[in-house]
Length: 478
Image 1 (cartoon, rainbow, N blue to C red):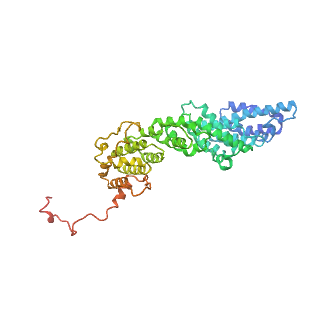
Image 2: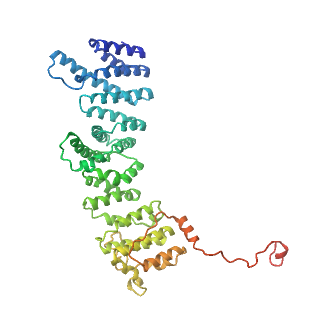
Image 3: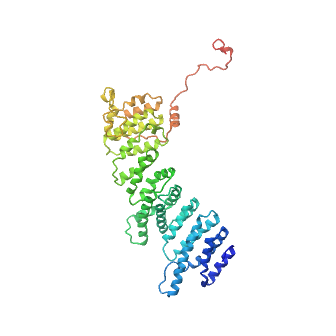
């Protein structure tokens, strides 16, 4: 039989629905769908299959085995279930069609089948895995958004996470970085925050919902770990690192599993290392991660070109956070203060101001560092600085034996605001931490100090009313 029009497909569907003895016509529809060379035919067949199975999925035997049925009827039910699975797969395969009408029809049909099954059984993991895989392979953001709209209840969240995990594992060695973009889009759409609410945090798995929540937590953890193994573009890589500490780590059962990913990012240096800092610091301070190389590597990130980079203020704000702990050894804080002030000699004025304010805070939080500020010109550390600027190990750079003599140079800086910050650093009026002023750039710094002028510059006492050539003929030659 050849289905060539919508009416023919509809006629076959009507024939099947009117008499169950004609259900073998479903295989005819599947054969035509497989051999069709026209999207018009495919749309007709998918529509016919939708009508047929939308009817049969109202029967419980389509979704599960029914006890107490005779052998012949049981075989029929089993055949129908297998035919349904085959039909579902055939329909899902057309989600990737370049014809919008066919793709949308295939997607909506598959979605309606999945939801119809839940009248009798739990959400089918196999069906969701197949659907998610087909949607992600289309690389169609709109379709991903549509399926993300379905991920609202707990069963959908768990099934979607497992589907993404399987997809990520299968494509971990794929060189196509675009697949990770859409997998990330769907993964971020799975909101698991409710699973970590106070209501569920200490739940002892006494109900089906609590069991599902427990499995969602495990799935979220394993899905992210597997997803991070997929090949990613630099843009996506940086996006993940930017949001990891706020959007992912709080909802992972074992965030320490991220250590390999974060350490590799940290070792890359540059922007990747900067973006990995927050997540690493959270693992160290909140999850007792033992990573002794954190501060030495952070120290090595302080390079002269950093102060001209667009992300310098973000980096300094994180330095301010990382160096606040009173448990840090004096030599470590001194090393950061010394390298910061040394490299600030080549930094833009607005960055120098931020760096000096950071050092001001460090001297207040770590009084042992104040000695570097107050060592006078006769001190040996000033006459012959023992600091080793090329040494990347803060324990070996001899910063604690040095002094911040660079402040004398900065005090003579052409920008008047810098000298005032230097004075505050040397003689702080209180122990209150100062605001770093991270939002202020060079333009705002210039405008701020332009307002400091109290009066107009002196001009001619008697303002001339005219300017003629004859008046200045004896002075200027025109």
